[in-house]
Image 1 (cartoon, rainbow, N blue to C red):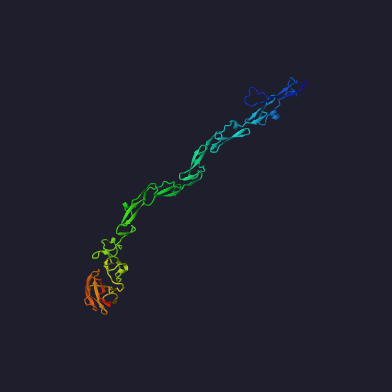
Image 2: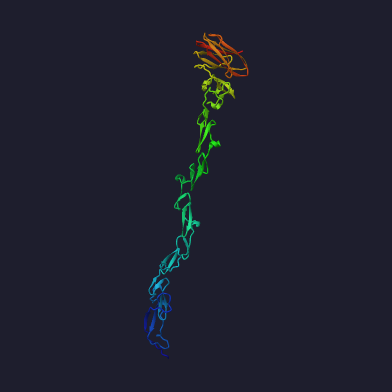
Length: 428
């Protein structure tokens, strides 16, 4: 039987800091060797045979926690992990951001981490941090610009500028009231009206144009003035004036003649009343009501109220009748009693007639003298009767033709005394 041979093994640990000649990773490596000094059975068998110890696996190595342990025969090596630097037994973090060893985009922010780093695109950019591209916030609608602002993309951001007609920082824009500020471009003769973000211009009355340019309208030349036909129109800046012509009075827009009742006239416009009676009178007149006895004084005139056509009546002539109001309408078959209170007193009677013969009689009471005057339907004299003298009855017989109408009779004091009388009309 073969006898086994055993040897006693002596182990000595030796540490070397020299890098193998082929190591170019830039880090220091640690190599541990084992030196065995013992007699070993030449057959390599038995309990005393040399066995390699894997310190990495057993955790008996001295590598840094941020290093990688690699078993060697004999011993082991320590190599700092990526992102760390040192001799393997001592490793410190590498700040790639500070050293510029990162690969972040120029538009990204590098953040150092333990053993590494992160890249994050800056605000206004998008991507993975290694590659970043500008975000166009404007078309994407991500901008916070005011609705009345213009968004303009710039590298890594955007700008907001208020539109024309608005003011603000672009994020908040308010309407500019150009009219109040006087920054509008309206013509001096135009009205400025503020609108949202702008303004409008409208030429003032009396001017024409776009509102930005306005020119005076010559209403007189165009005939668009409202001056009276008897007034002179004079153009002014933006308007006109009206001045009544000589012989007329008024505000220029309404002009009336200055001639009063009885003044000679050739045209109705010359008369203040606008009424000029033709021949045989040819004077200014006033309208009157023939249904009222002696209505002319009531309209500021005198004379007879005669028809002028179209169912209208006007005053003609000049009458002096005294101060009392004794006038009356006396129809055929009627009579009235009146008094002549002064030597110049007179009374006017209107007598409605038709075709026929009529007797007109003035009978004094007592011995005073009366005179009877008869006028036709237009106030023209027919005759004067004063034949008998004081106390005598004065009368006339009149034949009328031409249909219904009115004749006028005046009973006047013709003597040197006053008194009463009776006037009567009889159809024959």
